[in-house]
Length: 384
Image 1 (cartoon, helix red, strand yellow):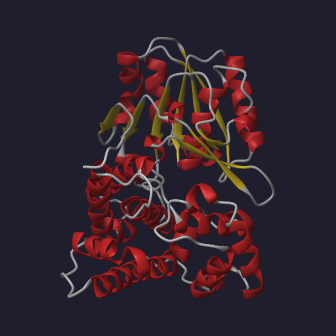
Image 2: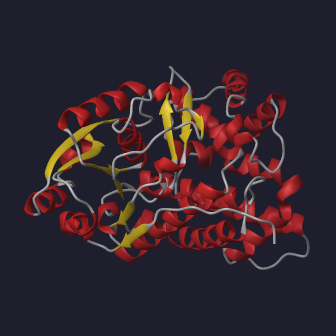
């Protein structure tokens, strides 16, 4: 067996309704009195936070809610949240929401324990020092950010950068499927496909793929593919919501160790330039990237096809084609937009997307096949 390393969050709790005893869960493991809860304004206004806030208050936690997080958070949002957390003299940070809220919480926890600027943290293993205790509570079944050491920040008008460091692994992730019940069908579908892409790209990653990440990716893909349409059509199905949340977390564990590749690299410019939600960006480019990658990854795609219930094929190429067709049909049945033109992108925009994708070398180096700018343009055209 090839040597490998595997890391993940040390403490996981999966329990519908657990936010109603969040304060007690924290009291069991963490000292201190002052907690900062990082979230977005919609969740705060909707009342979704209230059970958690009531539980924190009942167990003696003084809580500051920072609800300034927006999708694709810019540096200014991260730095402002860190400044407020320092001023509050926080003892711990809670990320509560989707991937953006949890990503900001990670960086806040690190920024408040040292004097390293955010600008010096971008890249892989560039974070120095420690962080405040960090607990993540996801409200979508998609990003897996609750168990990854990755935070994505918008660093310019259309560009994103990643901070990847072991300090960003949380102390604990608390998964409460009741928090995902109110997610609208479109967001449910997009975040679910995002999680599926995590599993697929972890399983086919050229770097750091290993037996544990493979096992997690396959189990995640089984759960996600079996439940995606159910949660889109019956958002109140708590069992299906629980399976999706678990699947997203398992996929997060997989790609935290066997990193994602070309789908994410080509999706980021779609989101950055055209402000398309990240999960939908992935769905728009997924089939075209997989068709391109099948030159090298067909046997792995065929294995994933069998994992999601497709009959074994006579050869790897036909198995891969069947798997890609299965995903295309799933995206269609989930009623997500199909084709880049469906989100307002024109053919004239494609060269700029291809150029922008080349910035994502951190991701492209994990892809089963190299992707240069000309090949990226061809993939975007196929996705158009």
